[in-house]
Length: 346
Image (cartoon, rainbow, N blue to C red):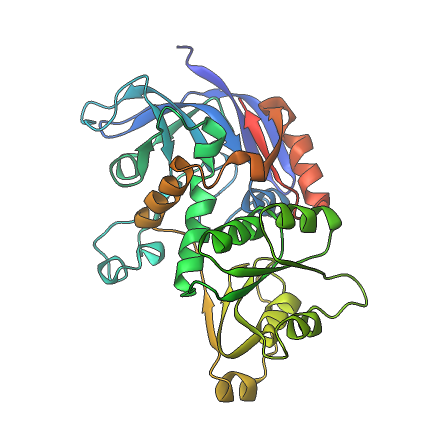
């Protein structure tokens, strides 16, 4: 194997270069994976736009985190994997020892180890992730399907944390890949889904995934009133915000019934503020939750859903591009918010 590879290096705001870099070296507990596919993600677009990520990326750095590939080298201490195996690795692993890990909140781990570098020919998977958050891909599952495990794990956790019950009515605001995953998952749970989106194509996709009602959130429309009209004035049992804007956070609170649950899944820009009616929250006993990231248990649940064929890349990935075109892809995604994922093939 050559000791050089092509990789996408982020140098700063919208400054990305696909260039030769050294193939990562591995330690005793690591594995080296040849990336067969890396999927674009809204977080990667934000990182590209801002030029950094406070917890994950300090430029210059190779970035990207949704991947599947083949093991090409293993460290001397690795026993769970061998060369030639097809694997999917999550982008983090908790320490399992800190205050939060001991309370089952591994996503809030005080020493959460992140790993980036999927937009490259090879990626090093560090020992902790090898041991706690890397999985074999069954033979019937494609690489693109397997690479969905990381975002899907976040969605499964957010959905289950909202405590849905069969027959619940759920409003999903925002119909990018994450919102569409929520819609598909809600239907698998036997829920009625009201999908709220701005674009016709997004709404059509939600409908194809089983959404029961579609609401256009365009200029002059009132999605909150539309939700109330569809629920006899009562509101939905659960509202999931998958946009990450203060306005849609406020919509979500005003869409739920008394005793309902709001999940603020979409992260707003830093220093955003939201105006909430405290009397509404208090006297209607509305539960407000926020969901961040995933845990190994939810990565396994997500992989089970993919293995069973409930979630496939055909729903969420609509194009494939070589690594050399990544800059063009990122610029396109910046101007087409809510676009489906692109599969980057190194």
